[in-house]
Length: 115
Length: 118
Image 1 (spheres, rainbow over the protein chains, first blue to last red):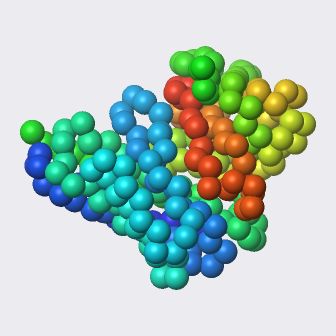
Image 2: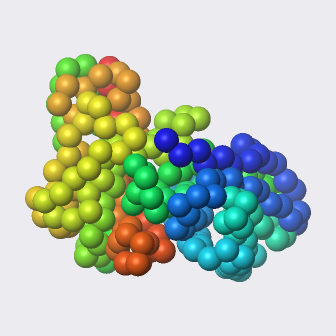
């Protein structure tokens, strides 16, 4: 079973703060790293899918970076707003071994943005 | 365009009863997945399917069966429900999961089925 770790588990910030969280994954057999945003009582929605080392992706105030050699990805939120409150999940797509073809999800970082 | 639709949304069962959860997608996706979500455990893959007529085990397959008779539908069955299967179940689909065939495609999730086993 692959180990995908997210930190911190939870985060409380004030409106307007910028924040970031980390996803760590195995550096071998890498194919893709997914980020999802999961609001309470809704279903996860894809933010980014990243496949190349050094990749940076941006969607509005949210951006992500990827380091496949050392096995980590950062998600950044600039100027957090209360509507950014959600659980942010990362998921690792493995290109080899018994986990081939499947996404392994981290446990998520729960972000709460206080007005 | 409905995306991924799960039925039912809620269900309460007694221990030992059986039931089937239905997932339907209208995006012509090849790959479909069933996950369960439990507090502190994240999303765990139960079974998945890489195409019509094929299924494979995920991380936590015991106590569940699946079928993919039609490309658009993926059924999850509980043969004899147990309290440990109380969970929120999510179905997802994607265009592909294979490297070189668009593994960079995101998964699209249904709204979930909340299942309680008494």
